Length: 204
Image: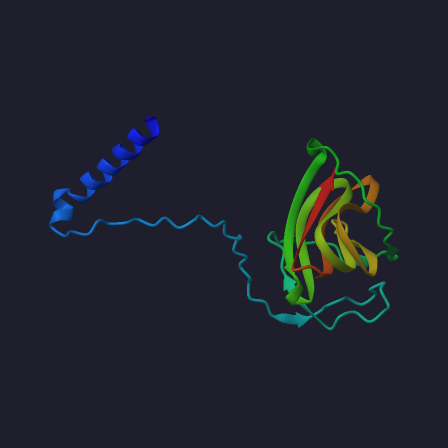
């Protein structure tokens, strides 16, 4: 019985709606269709790039053939080294994934994102701070060529990555436990994923 009563009431409601003044006058009722919200992928802005000649100075410790051209990313902060540059014997990098020191021990940090389509990219970091170790944080996948660390006294330490590919992780770049004033860090790398973020940290 209840079901029959509910059906009758529903029928009355429909008839009443059809006989409203707007319906009787033939006016159309607006129907709003809501589209489903679709999450959009973040827009990646590609900066224009130009290849330029790779510059290395006389006495550079790496003897193999280096890339002829690179995309140059200048340092955001220019640091002038007053002393003449003296290249120290080159070091062959032995990669090891490590934990980043506590935040209160980090005295400087910066990062640069390189894309696969750029090929070899020379990134430069103006540091001008004192510490005892440098770390390299890779987010993505990159082929690394060399790192060039210039100290305030003009000494330049070249770390040879030997064009090996490395994935996401935090690596010890260079350890100088006696403490040094680092002027600049220069890294030559090629992204082997769509984009790779390279971050450099100096700790004390």
